[in-house]
Image (cartoon, rainbow, N blue to C red; front, side, top):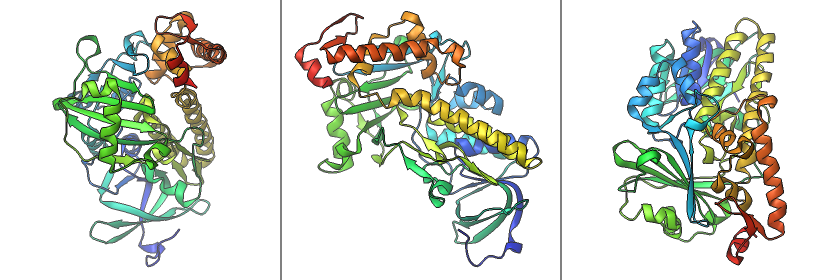
Length: 443
């Protein structure tokens, strides 16, 4: 993977080199620099730059406090008190207010314009002592020999070549998955293939009252929509579905998104006066993971390691959590590689457990039984409050505290069996024989 034309002795030494200046990389850089490490953070683009993933989770708040940026995030964002699920099939909606979460810290979050948010985190890394370079794309990496340094080559915007000798590398390259791609480690999530198309609008209907500021997840016939309120009257609207639906479209992505909006009664009702103010962007299969997150002298964090379908807004949380874990691994590697390996193994287990917890819901989001359960919001055995805690990002509870989650899964299995007999859970909480159209929708 080495880049020809640059000798090893021309490489600039650095303790930790971080590829990618998004939330994962900026979080790791901020924490490492604050602890005295010599950190170099490379970003291929220039901030501010557009990115999707604008809805944050309450569990992000403690990370913002740790980085010292909570007030800055609040200044650029919209307060998010809840998540709302709206069903075209059921003709109703259910809200999940974070005030009911089991952890008193998980009471609110923010919706943020990602360009401003990412720029804020990147600037914070520099303010804490990290050296930052923008428009500097990493093109190759030669792994470190035992006790040595990795050789990293990058190309600047003017075509100039740079070489760095890093004691440890954190890959936070996002969906580029630099190392996972180079090493052949990236694997798609075959159980839940999805693609997305999205844009920004002005003039869409915003929620008011108790649901003001909440994210709305609209469950449509062929997939689901997000509607995320942003500052200055902007609404982020995206549609997520199986890639086959995208491949079978007629016309442009803009035409496809407009058609999907029109086909959803609940979304189209909120978009009657909306005007699109951005380009329409599409992305391929959302969900993937690398077979391993680390190796000798490197670790993949954030989307560079894995990404889930965005329905539960977990992307930035996982990125920042991984950034914090990656910083701990990198710091340990500088003095005790053996201890760092143990930390890396634990970090990967934690991340995979968290993704598995949400992944169970994600792979079933188009299942009519799970949709019935979301719309009924039943709190028997604490199921609703447990679900709210998951939606808040509380994904690391010990087994002894996961009773509501186990109850929810048991109820799902029971209701799935009843569904096969022609019975369905209705939003009022009753189980009764479903009308023919509801059965057809769930067949």
